[in-house]
Amino acid sequence: MINEIQSQMAALSNPEDGRFLQRFFKTGPGQYGEGDLFRGIRVPVLRKLSIAHQSIPLGDAESLLRSSYHEDRLLALLILVRKYVEAGEAGKVAIYKMYLAGTSFINNWDLVDASAEQIVGAYLSDKSQEPLDRLARSGSIWERRITILATFHFIKRGGFDCTLRIAELLLTDKEDLIHKAVGWMLREVGKRDLRVEEAFLQAHQKTMPRTMLRYAIEKFPEERRRGYLKGTIAAG
Image (cartoon, rainbow, N blue to C red):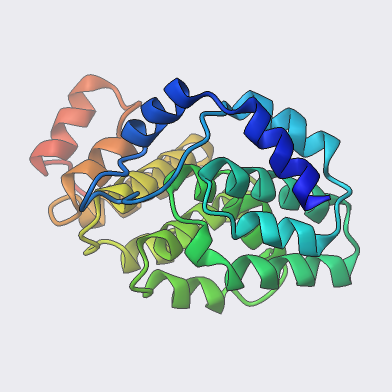
């Protein structure tokens, strides 16, 4: 089955799109996606393939996740997300453990964003969230992004405490991709409860990374946005 899927992927490859995607996902020397390989297959095509192949054995999905090609890994994650929804408890445990064992292959922002909420967040929704605190302290930028994106599952269900705790742990992170992710999740908190978001911002507006703050206040009225950027919004 895995050989059949990869043959399909090879047939769908577009070298010109592949070159564009390698630039878009920063695969040059010293960039965050350094050395990654792209076939040049767009996401809508991969989503259709994930539906067609969602019944493949878990072992085949794991093999696909360990491919050197970015699109193969994204397809594997899209399949795992579909499998997770339909799995029983034992299957969910297996997918969660496979995911955490394979984080070195979930190594770009699109791979994280397509799967962390749906697998890690969903699995931990009724369990201890200590694994997220551990991942937040990881030396891997992708594990740190996984931990904040996983909390999107809780946010959508009205739970904000974990997001705020992880956001505090990541306030001193040096990576722009983490600043963007944390700011995004804070903005999502604010969509559900603006008072909760603003309490966090008022406590940290003078010290949090500027990109994180800008993402968090992106939808605020202009005057209030400027106030936060200047650090002049008083605690309410």
